[in-house]
Image (cartoon, rainbow, N blue to C red; front, top):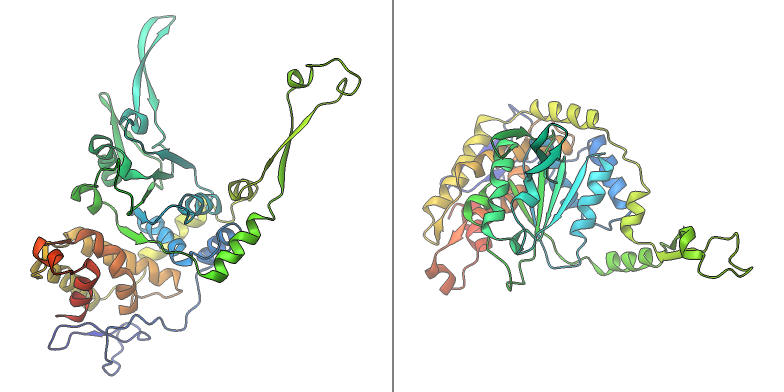
Length: 377
């Protein structure tokens, strides 16, 4: 891989260069991937998810990057974009234990991590630890900004240290462990803004958009083809009348099937052993010193930009390097290239940048500032 930093500090990319090569300089920055062969694990997961979710290939890639690197992911999007369905489909495709918590204003930290319960035993009263839904491989924190800061902070130890404290005991979480949180960026009533310390612990923050007309047409067609779920009613429900019509025959109830029912009927194509082997291969992906220098330079520019009150923390540089390595592996490469850095920069950096009041008054956005940072201005 070759990257050059010209006089103005902008990032030039040579997408097809391997470690040690020295191609001619090219104007940039442009995130262009070279011809590549997708990793079999990525193909298997994407095809499994595509059975129930239309499009969203980029989101699937981001979830896999978080899984392969041990990071966490925040998904932002208006209601109805299949955020919950997508996460459920990925968990099923990789054969992970899946847990979901619907965050509300009255949620308590013990509802997430668990609590000590006093119960009667033959030997007398004793405390028993009841583990919460956080003891899983993939935890979906649905509408995380609806919970109070006290509850949001309950995730901090788990996300950073992969362990939780219940009473006087500390418990290790299962491996792998990944938090995927969803957030509606439009609705503000009854919500609490995520603190900077919480946002910084999310390796990636991806913003979902509406599907194309063709994709939405496919969504509608699928919704009309799911059919019905039929179940025999309990015998007590059919014994209300002793007539000959109901005697000896169980009534059958039905409910329209949904996309979640289709997911439950699937079997995972990727095992935990496959995921572990993939993680080991990601660790072997080459990241050059020049690439690391660019990561540091981009992060440092956010701290010196006049439109920002708060720039990116060192976690941003770590996330850029690790996520780029995972994306390179997913694309079938053994080395990271500038295209990885440029493709991931918005998801890694935007949620870690806070605009100044003066910049907001002038109509500046975080996306505009990031464009400046990538261009070296």
